[in-house]
Image 1 (cartoon, rainbow, N blue to C red):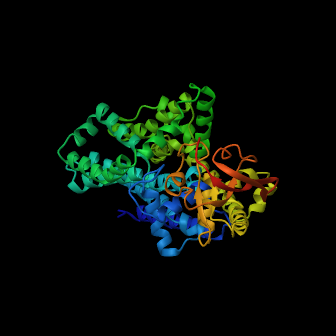
Image 2 (cartoon, rainbow, N blue to C red):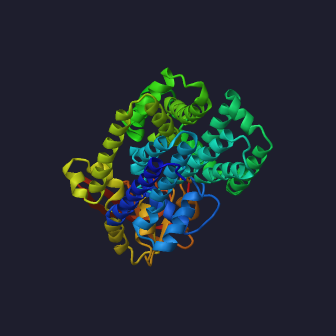
Image 3 (tube, rainbow, N blue to C red):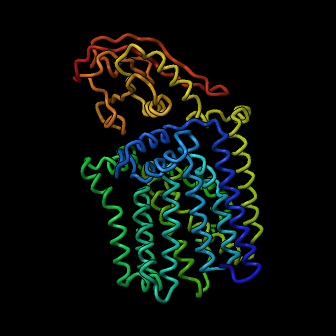
Length: 488
């Protein structure tokens, strides 16, 4: 608890603003008309059948959705509800890490800085694997700093670190960056090495391994589908060495972390030498920030990388940057950064609850993945009364159909267009020619070239288009197909 009146005021102020921001995010989720995007609908579908693994991700995302929808129902906001809660939890871990190892003022600004990062703001309004990953990553930092900063770390500290690593692994495999950063810190930092090369770390390893093991066993029982999909995402089969992709990735990080925090991180990493008294703390934070960034930047240069693949860098980044700015007496930059991010937050809240603002700004294409799915899937289902099934070859539409047409009397199944299982639906919700004799086939393609060698009878039924706002629309093409005779 705070030790002085001023500390208590900052403690209370942090929690007031943290809870207020999270409450506002939840209210906006409830008020927004945003449909579930393709990934979100897929995660929701996974949550209907809980397991220790899924085709493209470990299981935490499905477990989180199952928890919120079991309590509040299957509305879009309930599917997404755990996202802002995870980020609130990450902010709490960051706050307490800074409070214990630096001071209350640093804790306040680091916690608020986290909750207002642009990437965190966006991630609080969609349900993705980043939210639980960042929560457990932040928790891992908290327990790691407890272990290193204490003369006699407790078994609880070592157990907590193991639990955070294991649960982070069940959230997203990017938690492996945490282990890599931990190994680097152990090699180069005497305090870290002294704290971790103790018997207690065996408990950390045992707990982390025990938690991660069910997902590893699931992968082994399913031909390592998740790991294979992760490797395929790296896209190393394409033409390699893409400096333009690297430049794009680095530019995107200014948007994810904010212009000022990312610029400060790069500048401080190159130019600053920490005081001896806190060297292990700042060095550890810097390594945990730069390890994900360096690995994903290398991946971007080799082939490609999405902006959020390095999201794990930012819990330690916000701690590092906050400490650096306060010690440089550059509070104005920190406050300016948070002020800009708050403006972005309020603008985003207004836009996501009123799509006409987005349309008038000419940004309709940026929201097309979360618009029009209910209307389009309802129209498609209405055309399928006399068919054995609705057969789909597009992952985005498949997820939307399963979520928005949960009461459909016609079965909804997937067919792979390339004789290769590329997503969860093609494996676990597949077209069965023994049961699905005459079907309504829905595809993004205007021709039937990718199925005409499997079906003897194919009848075009025309396109179905839905307006998405502005000048954007989405079109699927419908066919009646029957008389399956197999793959050539």
